[in-house]
Image (tube, rainbow, N blue to C red; front, top):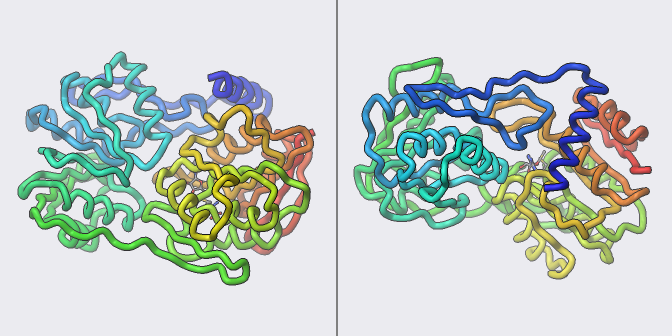
Length: 402
Ligand SMILES: C[S@@+](CC[C@H](N)C(=O)[O-])C[C@H]1O[C@@H](n2cnc3c(N)ncnc32)[C@H](O)[C@@H]1O
């Protein structure tokens, strides 16, 4: 808790000092008689993004209008709990089975239930690798950006849903086309879309009761570093090395590192390479995606690295990293979107956390698209920033905690 409070304090100070403007975001959710106050996670962040979207509103509105009974319901890809809070508000004993791959979604849903005085006794959590219950009577989903992951989620549902179960998927109207409806038909059953409302539609898919096998993980090699990488379906860089990661691998820092954090590790390729270069070091892999953390862990074993030196955390940046971990190097290829939204607020949060957690003299070593101007952020935070390498598109930057 102290770590979160401290980050908010720093975040506040920097915001007032450097940005000179306070973000105003809407937090009042009001749809079909359901009133909630909803925040993103973390609640305090350098973005004016909202915790829900019109697709959430559309789904909840259609459930209220059809007087949906409180049957056992799965909720999948609910960003920060708008759907689960909405149903809990309609009926606090509505049995909810909430599946998410994102730690921020899990933490945000908890936070928003608390904020709206909604108990969570009616809710059970699942990651996208846990087995779902087989007595679901209704499924509500938000369409994720990654359609391979979506196909994986539908396939999982095909393995547990009785014939005729309705799956309602809310999405922006512009994301819905015949190719998407084919994905439903291939992995779960026939589907059709509603009329548009606020530029969104709700697709109704009816389970055909035929279980499908899960697709195999994708595996690929990075021959120049003798690494083999496998990726679960929701992991960044699905079937080849990311170009930002490649320039990072070609320009890793030198030093006598003992404790290294791979922040936003994805499949763990950066941390795996540092384990080869610095065999004495403990490597800490952190990602918001549970599948990413699972892939990094599997890749650690696949590349025969020593079990006691690899550590894995499903977390929002370094929020819950144990206090005794004091890195002397943090590696980071930061995300520049969250779901559909293009944003650099997570990069900012990662840099703040790195500054807070690095040992004195420790190094933050990052890669970024040149146009994102991360050097401005690092200079503000660390009061120093060195360009280590660059090509037309990417830049490798380093800042030292002094
Ligand atoms: C650009 S990818 C980099 C992946 C990998 N390090 C590489 O270089 O290929 C950014 C990663 O940050 C993760 N991420 C996004 N938000 C996060 C958060 N709040 N906390 C931790 N990781 C996060 C994403 O899941 C993704 O794996």
